[in-house]
Amino acid sequence: MYINPNEILETIQMVRMEHLDIRTVTMGISLRDCSHPDIEVFNENIYEKITTRAKELVRTTNEIQSLYGIPIINKRISVTPIAVAAESCRSPDFVSIAKTMDEAAKDSQVDFIGGFSALVHKGATIGDLKLINSIPEALESTEKVCSSVNVATTKTGINMDAVGLMGNIIKKTADLTADRDGIGCAKLVIFANAPEDNPFMAGAFHGIGEPECVINVGVSGPGVVNAAICELENPNLTEISETIKKTAFKITRMGEMVGREVSRRLGVEFGILDLSLAPTPEIGDSVAAILEAMGLERCGAHGTTAALALLNDAVKKGGAMASSSVGGLSGAFIPVSEDAGMIEAVRAGALSLEKLEAMTSVCSVGLDMIAVPGDTPASTLSAIIADEMAIGVINRKTTAVRIIPAPGKRVGDSVEFGGLLGNAPIMPVSNFSSETFVKRGGRIPAPIQSLTN
Amino acid sequence: MTSSRFIITVIGSDRVGIVARITSVMASFNVNIVDITQTIMQGIFTMIMLAEAPQENFDLAAFQEAMSAEGKSLGVEVKVQHEDAFRFMHRI
Image (cartoon, rainbow over all chains, first blue to last red; front, side, top):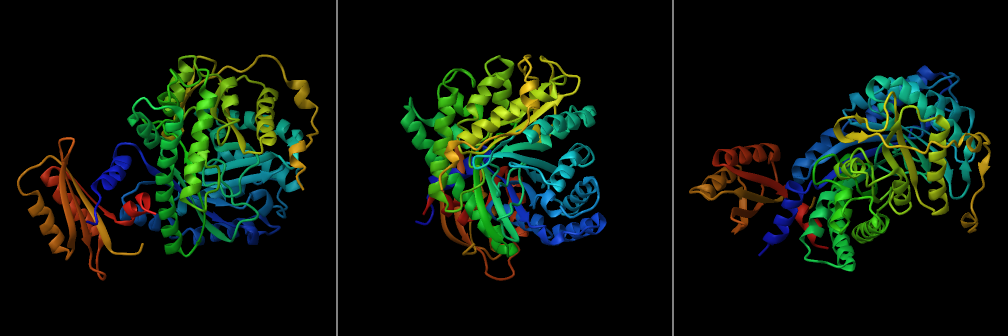
């Protein structure tokens, strides 16, 4: 007997009922050979390079989708951080580069392009500053371009000058996209310890140590994990952990298979597989629901951090067994606006910014897709970033902030971004000032944990 | 992808002629049945076939479309997926 009906039906069930999907196939493309002092020539070079490399990406990915019957939701491109690739451009601003990336993404029919990025964890070059100052207009005038700035690492500490600057950049980005509730900020991530091979947006870029061209795959499946837990009868937490691990293993295998086949057909190296439980606004595709299935009345109740720690760790263990190429972020995401359960928890008063911050010390990323009042001072945004960076730097993990100070909105209002970005209730921030602290600038030195050589 | 074998699943309410009509579409594409099993899972008719497609000149997209259209007219859901989708997930 070749067929095991239970196995086959389990897979079918995961896709049909529990939203198992390949969230993204992301092609990383190096733009290091595109440098030119004339920004017009640089733009021509990157357009040519991106559209040539990604020419067959969407068609091939769609073929694989029907071959295996597994939905592949997004096709994306990540490129060398533009601050690096465009360093030699004489132009004072880099907005036209973002527009060129947008055009290349549209012509390649991908959903997003990431890499309008700078790495300034120890200090900023002239090119880095040009890029950062171009972010608000770049995100206002493009649709598919995503931007990220790495301002801290465990090895270097936290660049507080950059943290201070990014608070202002976020405010400006929100103001320029005020007619769309500040949606520009949903495409901007501030990182500590940014991974160089992450396929997920908005933080994807093609790192400096990466090859010429690479395929990275992001798999998701909070609904599958939730369903597996719900099937257990009165389990203890060890049993829950075991079940999550097994489920994560299966999901990862699926991603590995898809990634290898896409890269084989395109003749492009297979990079990493990122198993991240990335929720979507669809009912049943929620990370909060998993935590609640473990026995919490609402996500955000005491015990939430422990439950999330268990989840994140079990996901990693299952993933690590299933593939030798696990990388990126691999864990659980907790983006508030993108997760129906998180939104409910905020509305019910169960989940606060402070609790989310605690949760980020044990999950795979950070404060993600959080909407705060439009009149939040830039220095407060910077201070929120600084706190989050500190958690990442001290715990030797990636943390990130994607926060939207929604123009004209107050606590009690909500913002609607639509699609995968969902909607978010405005969350209160502390009204006490952090301004003097943020203004001091300088660098928070690398922690003692970094002295490992 | 290592083979040209596909898992075909037919899920829906049972009625006369499902097997006959689905397999005749397969025959017209020269697709051979290697193994077949059918059960009632939670009251729903479920047929699973392991099928082998011809190595050459096989148009997967057209086959999937024809199978799915036949399924629609029968009121059942028909999926054609490469066997690796199941092998990879459950077997090491």
